[in-house]
Length: 364
Image (tube, rainbow, N blue to C red):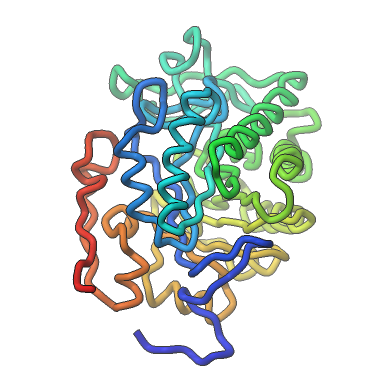
């Protein structure tokens, strides 16, 4: 790899999120793998999976539901029971023993769930009673999404409280911080985008109202964690889970400006549309609307990640599929080594195959 001049940063430059030093800027993106054990509790192979990847500057865990009603898929871990806290503690201990840092991603799937996954088989909740196109992944196989129940105004403080409790549980589990999942068509994103939020109260309408729930969650999570230990993930134009916004540039510029008022660890942005591959939002403009650290994500490699940081268009770069297949990705990047190819057939569910059996570089 070509060296850079000393006055410029790159992927291997250290960075500090407040008082937490990261050895590099190569971030492991949150990756749903559907391999939690009974009770949605992290199990042995999850411990090994995260331990192998502790060389990342920061690991962001797979999305972990804040409550039983936040569940949207089989085999995804939670952070709302004592057994889940204890399971995650084994993971964080393993990462810390290897010198790594790890945040947990706090998740509520909203309408992207199914009554068969809900306690008492109740309907999933959402900002508005709008059914998503597509199918839910359930224990009975793929089933059509259902029309969700719109959350009432007096229920929203309970949602905020569930995030705050999950943040407290994350502390008990030994995490270094939390990321709020406000992307990819899940509950917080459903409030942010006008394609899914048709409310006529203080949580719907203009973007200031649509971001109100996210802001309240941010504020309460910072109360738990303090400065620079809370990140937020957004996806301005990702259409995954049948979601859209009529003015993504304006909407997310405004969100970035509002989030600049808080001492966040970072703003994590999935750039472009995972479904179509298209990009219409100006992400440099969006990055310039945010006063803190900007984490770029979606399709970056070594060269483009380095370039984004050198040019000041990102402070950190998150990698997903490359970290699935290359547990030692920072080493491979540093030595400019060939990369293992991800096996997409083993991404979701299963055993250790395609999970903890990708080879590390062993050449010293």
